[in-house]
Length: 364
Image 1 (cartoon, rainbow, N blue to C red):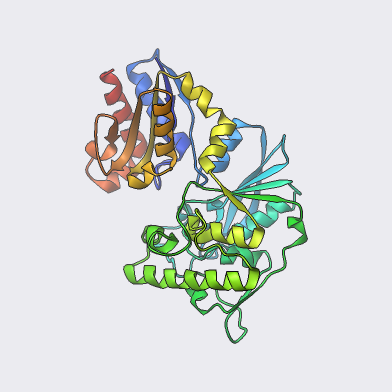
Image 2: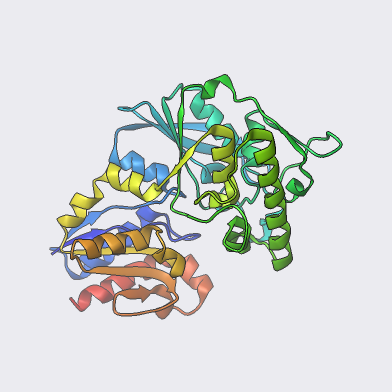
């Protein structure tokens, strides 16, 4: 039996690589003769640069940048040796992974560190820059990213706006001259989110609660991003509000499109091509994927949903292992079924995932 183990991260508890290792360990505990092909995946969020670095020759770099609350952190990025492509994972700067739950502050959280990572990558003179977005603690539309690269965002009195998404409610003017380091560089945003910037399916409403936003704050942030979109159109001539995917990472994707002229591509497709996923899936007898929370959003183009779709297209059975799921079935198994306490699941996710894989393998 040849099994392709292709999970994404279990947010807040396991990196994709750790999840793949735990699943593989559980399978091999029961069936030591099975062939396991480990393939940790990402759609542009945490784990994106690691997935690419494992797949193709790449060099790792690091830069001191600011996290979403303005604290210094070390952010990593990579350059692909055969294509003069730099790859930035925005969550290395603005990611939820840098914050405790008690620190979440979506009104004030800022993407300046992402701009600093981009500047560090551009200093290496790439021909192409891929920015993976996802896993963010921010909801500022990429305003902080643009500010770090030289943009001036000011209110009606000409005063520079403070950091954060809430401040965009007072935005009146944007002054922007792209730095010379951007000249001739192709910019790509990697995400599998299709949400627009604002509205009932926009960044604030859909993802704001995950970043600590109350219902009132969600409305406040959506109104601020609506103002931001209007001023972007007036000042830069970029109408990004309803661009599919513009709402990714609290609207960071919209900022990358508006200020850097980026185009949005599927992060999953970028990883799938680099890792030769279609051929590896075709060679497998069965596919296992997984993530922390498997729900309707997962089925709408996120990693697990895309793997399920690809498996169906190739006639391969596919099983999902998840921390929790909105529906459970013979092909969707959860850690919550083993351990009802959510805190324990988060803390002991690796051991529980290994047990879940072993229990499933015993039935094969």
